[in-house]
Length: 403
Ligand code: TRP
Ligand code: SF4
Image (cartoon, rainbow, N blue to C red; front, top):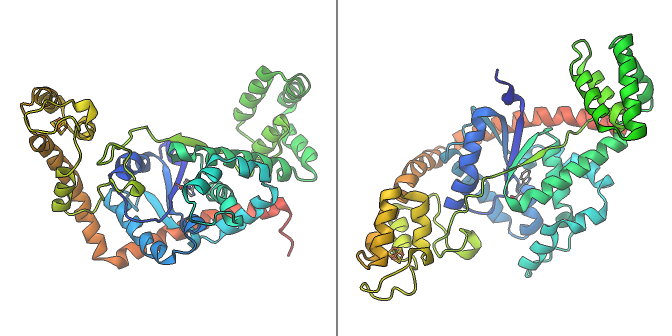
């Protein structure tokens, strides 16, 4: 199997309503691409939805299935990616609890989304324990699968950063068994006399003098060993860097390319602005929404020339139209040679054509809720078996494996 299959990619979405074109272009096309090359875990973050929507349970219940259907309709393929629901893998909650023991309050209060969301959702009491812990729960989601890459938008980067910090802190606090030093020494001996002496020398240079070249050399030396186990390798790396064993590896944020989807009014497409085209909008609704889109405000009459760069319709042309059509818009608009409805027609066609197969697939899944349930049950089971393994190690590291 190709090597990158072993990079595990994980991402989640909160179930807070139907998805729109912005999700398709900004997130889902990327997921569909990633599932071809990586071991992907995509999940519905229903507990995260509860941190802010704790008084709107009905919305979450319905949105879960809508969300999964939208993913499937956009091409997320259950034979390539695991699709599951957070609350059905109960281990997320256990890891969240254990991480909360070592999560400094200062770190959580400094996460930008903490204050921002409180500002944005003023009508809601977000001074809750659960909401403060939002990034801790997200860290648990990521670390429990030992994911190496987390595709997210700009707004989530701080959460991945805190995940990395919590992993580091966890490994530092719990990654060293009581007899860690002896075990590291035993692992070193298994590399043979000469190499283990070199290892000790490089380690000393790094730890005593901060020599980063020595660190790099020692790392390469360990990686090159054929006859040591994975555990021994981790121990040697941990002992080298002074961090202990890596129980929870640090993930990387995978920034989703900034193809910002414009909304119908020129602002970013977003449910809260009411400027969106839903993935399951009927063709006549799509048509209606685009026909009534605002245009360059200076173009009051058909005979007034306009300026495409001041028009939200132009943003759509840049996304959907080829060079020829774009040239037609630029000159036709500036010379008042075309009307706004003519100008919008190619967009109407392009969006309808894009959504047609998505709507069709969504309809098939809407008509077969059992199939959707089965896909999710499968995904939950696979997710569960990975999470269970990680928790076994985590409990042992924390010292909770007494029976
Ligand atoms: N907080 C993310 C959002 O609002 C959703 C989420 C929850 C998530 N857990 C995650 C994303 C883990 C990536 C990885 O979009
Ligand atoms: Fe906008 Fe097109 Fe009308 Fe020009 S012609 S104002 S680009 S809709």
